[in-house]
Length: 341
Image (tube, rainbow, N blue to C red):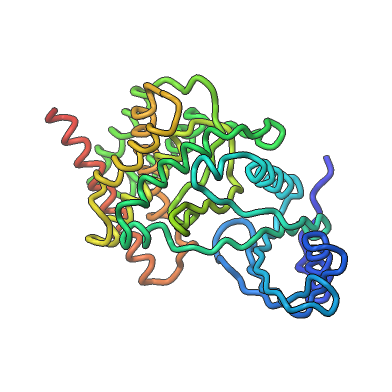
């Protein structure tokens, strides 16, 4: 097996050449790059992500034009090419028109540096948009995800298949950790895992294209529609996994910032009702979404408790511990509700 060469950070001269070549590919051979600057976009995730602000000319002697691109440096060439192919297929589909959803466009790929260049997509945080606009945002999320999941992406572009077996295998050691860390909540945590193991709804008839990391950080609100970012974890699987993950993220925000968003139950209903309106009939979808919500909740509690590298600052660590306990209480409340019903 041939190993992937170590990724070496390119020099500024290297990047100038890459950006100049990409500009000519995108705008024509007469395009020229006058100046550019780079700004890191995120401290998290496997890929280094940079925003490039370019000042260029589309024709020699023409007026200066500004462009904004995102550069993502990948560890593996195959991962970069897979994401590029998925985004190109999405761009060539009617997903955007059907769902009122935009995705980044591929500008160029520099294989030597495993640098994928994409259009920079600006927009308002979807959490902020829900708080400010209320009415239109939540239904738009449901419609956009229904369109995304119904888009035909080639098997060659997306090979992974998400499964509940894999979810449970990942959760079991996490549950052991949580029971040891929070003995007072161990009963609720074990009960949650038992329900997931023994009450799993049937799988969907066929796998769909799923985003794979459909959290609030990867959704923006722009011009009355949604922008979806970061398709690095896209896969073929159960669309309920995307919905369950997003809903759990929204539940966490309602706890972290009480009063900022509408009640969680109303947000959940608004998204799922609109999703059902635009998606093909799926009689077990609601059960599957609830299953993935529970699984994601357990995983999120574990991450908040034990991942000390994502936000290493002391205040951030304390806040994450508080959130973990609040989410554990949600599990306990759900268990008590089940027992009383």
